[in-house]
Length: 443
Image 1 (cartoon, rainbow, N blue to C red):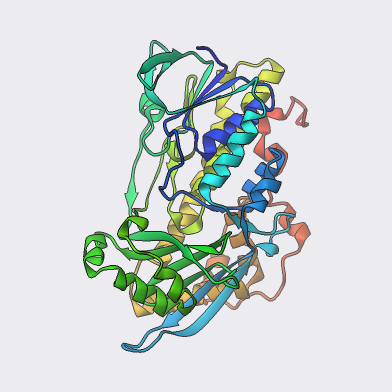
Image 2: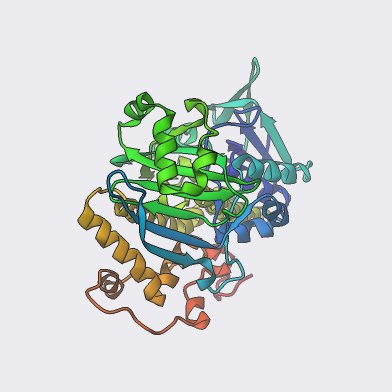
């Protein structure tokens, strides 16, 4: 079997790449191990940059129809006294609308629905899009991809091989890259439960010792993320579901009924956060995207978005090579040039966000509460934070910012203009630099 581009893995990253290539006339084969929907939790929060990419793929209308908008991030600090309900002591709201962009919100979409929409879009380019469900990628043999479907083993020859298999990546193994894993002192329990119809805002609720993230989904459901100490899962299970019922009900009474819909621990998934970032994204005719190349702490909701954004840059590059009659392997460095520094930046941002909620001390909680409030009080901090997590651009924090956030200096009163923000939004020339000709113009 021959194709121009082979993709191992039909998750959102692999599918985005395949759709982008197929609609530009590049023949692509996707080998996806699963033959039916997965029950495992995967990313559901779609950031603004990803919405822009999905619009260019002409699937945004469907994505929006199947999603719940998140226009702000709410941070609610609670104080607990033994035997009493927690009392709110601070509420901070950070808004996507502070970013100078038409994409002024994020979106919560069930993961399998996003995959379904992308898969169906790919099938509309049937001449170029070849999707093989229930097909396991076994690695490389004689310079070709070796796959197994049912009882048949066969080879696929391509000009470029892309690993989008996730954290266990045979493509990454074949590239022999360096991977250094960083673990954390906490894990998460995640489960989707019913929510009241008027519970529409996402929020993160914290006390000195508790963290509960709540992100509304369509159909009156909410994705919940509950932080526990690393290694504590077995002990919590032994306490029974009543432990979860009580913890959720105390932190968010509106979900008291919804949390009791959990009747079995099998519905609750354990998430073990860790991060890594490979030292290179391509070798010869092999390249990797998404979790094959990097894994991010889930605190900032970036994992799925980074995979789609990888696919966008790589897909645009490969399609351009085809249209300009350029050799794919001669230009793969552009993909790494663009994506690796951006991913490194967001990995650091997510790591710092994770540290904010990693320590259970009253003095640390006070520092956290003040730091989050300062992001709202100082418009430049507000804009920088939302711009960076949106993926639409990059505006680094400097020492002055950190001094203000740490209350060593007063908050600035001046609002950031849309015009000033424009210089920090990613331009097409920054997203796709290979399109510049020798005069520095976009071709």
